[in-house]
Length: 245
Image 1 (tube, rainbow, N blue to C red):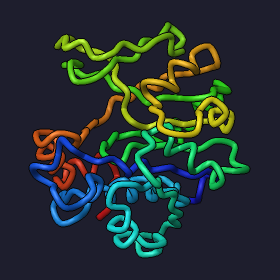
Image 2: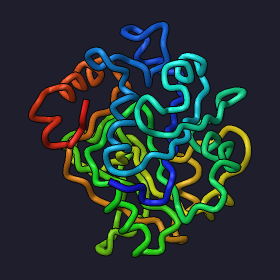
Image 3: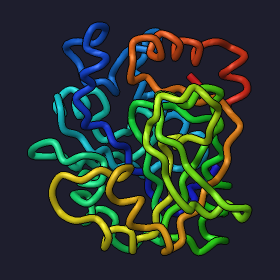
Image 4: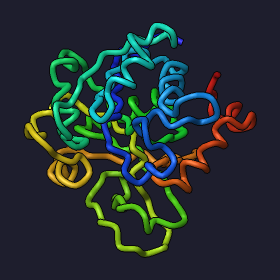
């Protein structure tokens, strides 16, 4: 598959405090899934859908990630690095990578600690069709108590966000995959800032859309979900998601 003319930003600088009981000496994105680091599965997912120009926003234990992946050539991709001097949050990490994003029509952003079964090319197509400033991949979960939820109107425009309430009802949650237009960077201040809590609410009214996904969603942020993620190695899952390893 040919490149689709954009870059993917992988947010892999988190401290991973909730996962330290299982992964104590490595960054969360290098947590092993079988005999491979979780982050490799995301790289392969991007590559197999034609996205081969990657930026890894590193921070905590950055050296380990850079040593593991190098320039990306072993996996058939090109990797550039943007290293945080101190924790900057998800928004601050994207802002720091500004110089590596110049001249792009849009770019993909992915959390490095979650896997979403999605068609990235279709996500980008929807973003361009809507002429959106940001498109958020969302997924319906049966128990949204761990997550904030995304509120949409009948046209899939995002009209609000609800903080975690502990309510165990179903809801639409942020799947950790976004498409951004370059103008989004003007709305992200320098320093420590969260995309989810600070940037996205400010973007409402500027053209934020939700792209509903129906595939697998796994967040490895807790020990229980990390153990659940091992099913990514199961053959039926690989067949369905198109992951090749």
